[in-house]
Image (cartoon, rainbow, N blue to C red; front, side):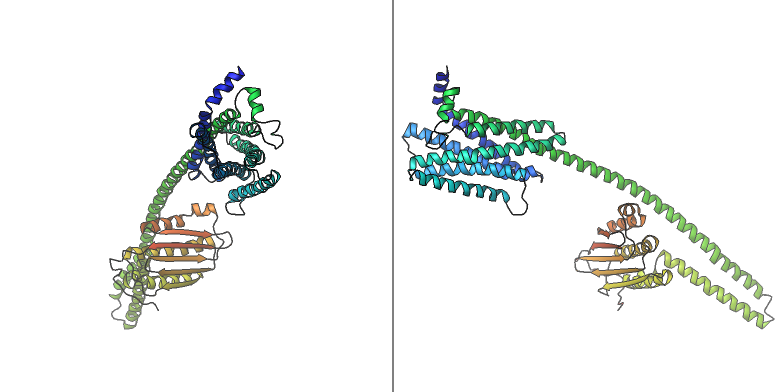
Length: 501
């Protein structure tokens, strides 16, 4: 019975070689296609040498198949170049597999392309042993190439498969911790197949003068089991290919998870922004109503009282026309009331809309505002504007002015700072406003709940700009606002031209 099986597979040995090479080639191709798409993990970073192993090992078996067909059909006899090519494919494939296992177990980040250097070092050591074997065999070509093949399987094949199996078992624990049981089981079966492929498949080799192939070799295996060792290797190769390709699905699974998580984060952020925007609009409306109520009170208290005083004074003038001294005193009092009333009215108007912004532009308005704000609060404000003559559109100017107002308000109200630096710079491509303070800085919660900052963000969006906040507790806060300059095809000329120098 065993003899019958041996005869069947001896006749079909070329088919065995074809399936053998195809299994590893498919593995290498699948891994190579996945290398560029996989996320940055230890498993994905070590995949490149695994792809090299699959492709070169598959080609190696196909080379054996073509050589066998050539001998049977065309009386082909391998020459030195052919033997060197076959040996190079075999040794490079096993060295690549070893590099994959080593890189999986102990990732090296200190050097560039560590998998390449691992493989080259193994090939260098193997080359020295092959040269020593050549000297031992007195450079007899037929025996030398056969012994070199056996040495590649003993020195490279068996250790590389064991290291790879170990690395896959370590990676399996990561899958188990992530509750990816199916992929963990795939790696378990792949590691078992690698061990059998290496320890058994590469131990039973062609009989050579090299021990232990003189006693335990491919003929021993076929005599014991009735099948050629190539068939056993093919079964293990197919098993490895199936379960490794199945394990590669973990990358797609992880990508889908990351995409779902990113979508969930985007939805959460969108919902939070919607809530913040709603609350912000509500606060804007409340602030507007409060401002209107304040202006109404001031109009009633200041202007109402002043006008009432003027009315009473004018009525009193009618009875004081005979007494010139009293008349002059009352006229002086009425003049003072009128001047104060005009001052209060100008103050209210300035708070609503600074006249300097419309009449003389942003630079003059900022200088006037920062000077008055410094006097009012005691904050040391340094203002720098470059260039001093700036021609911006009105909507951009009012956004920059209101941002500066809000930022300085936050500096006094929240940062408890003593100094603030404001730098406004206009280049051909963008406008940059930088506001820095020496306050206590912001933490994450404060930056999220700060309505002033939220208002600044909304204003920056109105002009399609970007806001960057750099703040560390105890080291102050820096706001960097960058607004793209208006279309250069349209003149950036505002209705005023200023020189603040």
